[in-house]
Every structure is written in C-alpha cells, then in structure tokens.
Length: 341
Image 1 (cartoon, one colour):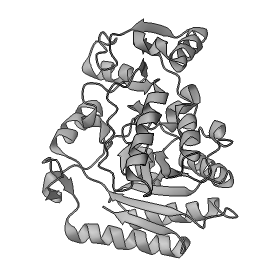
Image 2 (cartoon, helix red, strand yellow):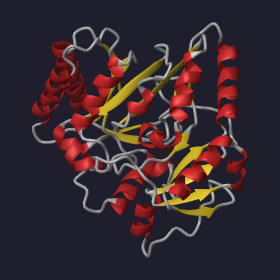
Image 3 (cartoon, rainbow, N blue to C red):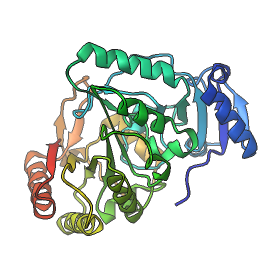
C-alpha cells in the first residue's frame, strides 16, 4: 500500500510558532493539498460530506496540525506507565478499533508540533520516578508509524528517549513505513511492536492498513536495525476455523523471521471485546461489517472507569489463551508472553 497523504489539512495558527508547524505547512503547500485554518485542533468544523458516513470518511483522510496544550500524560495500558501524546487518530479503518468511541465525533487525525514541551514533560516524569525505569506508549490514541513519514515526530521521540537514562519507548503499528526510522539512535530503548492477526481478521476487519507480508518485512528490517521487537496479537477473534487461522499466523511469522535475532522477543495477547457505545458507532460507520457483536454470546466485564465491555465467556477465553500460548511456545520458545487480557 502507499503511504498516507491527507486530502485536507487544517492548521492551528499557534502551530506556526513551532519549527515543525512551519515545516509541515510548507510541505503540504508544495504537495498542493488544500490547507484551512482552525482555531483549535479540537474544534474542526465544516468537513465536506453530505451524510455522516461521508463526513466520517473525509475525516479519516484529514490531518490537523496543532499544539498539544494538555501535557499531563496518562495511560490505562498494562505495558507502560505513561502515554506520550505525539498524535491522535488513525487513517486505518479497523472495524473493531476502540478509537471508534474514544474519538467519537472527532475521527480526524491530529499531529502535535510542540515536541520540545512534550519531551520536557516526559523528562519530568522520568526524573520523578528515577531510578526506576519509566515506559512511554506512543500509540495509545493513534498509529503513529502510519503518519511519521510526514512528521518524523516519532523519530525525534525515539532519539530523545535513546539518550535518557531511565526512559523506554514503545508503540504498535499496522504499517510498514519504517525505512526512515532504521537509522535512528534508539540505543535499544525503543520496543517496536507490530499488530498481527489471522488472515480472516486482516482481510475482513483491517482495511486501510499494510498487508501481513508488508508488516513482516518491516519487522525484519527493524529487528536487523537493533530495535527490541514485539508482536501484539489483537483482537484474538473466534471466527470459523480460528485454530487453523492462528496456527498459520505463527507459522508464517516464524518463517518470515528466520535468521533474525529474536532473543528479546515479546508477545501481547488481547481477546476481542466491545462496549455498547462502540457497537453502535461501528455499525454506523461500517454498516456491512461481519464483526460478531452479539451480547448474548459474551460475558460482561466491568471496566476500570465504570464502562463495562463484552468479552468471550470464561471457557472460550481460556481456550483462546491456551491455544495462543501453545503456538507461541511451539514457534518461539524463547519469547516472553507479557499478558493475555
């Protein structure tokens, strides 16, 4: 697939006070992309489109260049202490994605240009926790790799964390546009993770993302560039013949990574889940989706913030976990499985 190019760009006036803001404006002018002004990256109005669905599609190809005012980082991820806010929103059209509801009426993509302020805040968090290691997640609210060929914000973050004593960076992607990141001075402090799934899930629920083979080729490249490598298998989904589908996934993964140093390989396993609000939004945005979201077939699990989610019933979830662990142990016996949720 081709790298993301926005069809429409909005710029906050304050963004032009920062070098990256000016650089992006110049870049998009040269590309003859329409540029509009917006008072705030949270207040983008007047997106083209007759229907909600048309406006949603346009929003997913709209980039807003803004300033991140709230520098308080937070994360609910089990794999990091803080989120580092480089971007919000994603150009992919994954039917199951939790950003469907967290971004709600603002599905457009935002990139933040006040990187020095963001890095200063990250340094404060590291100083507070020293000598403990502080892990930052750069993909809580976006797929940052899908955007970084335009902004290089992620590359700057990798190099910033690379020269810290107690910082670590991690992110996950479904995109293969990694070439500009291969020469970054990461010093082994950034874990590059790829989201992978069975053929069925990628084909039916992940339009607008790189193919499995493209992701695997990119994984080889980043591992050979010395990055610690990880894979997130998510969402693990019970489709017809799912056991065979996931066996094939790990088999292909193993074949693709022959000859690569995998001594520090990690896996994260996340079963498919959905909330009632998410189901409503997904059915509105992807009316023909094959995604199974029948509450009667699921178990209700209370969430940390009072919003419950529907997960697989206990026995089915245990079956998923046991099967995934077995496959990983078979193909990647040295790998660390960080969690199943």
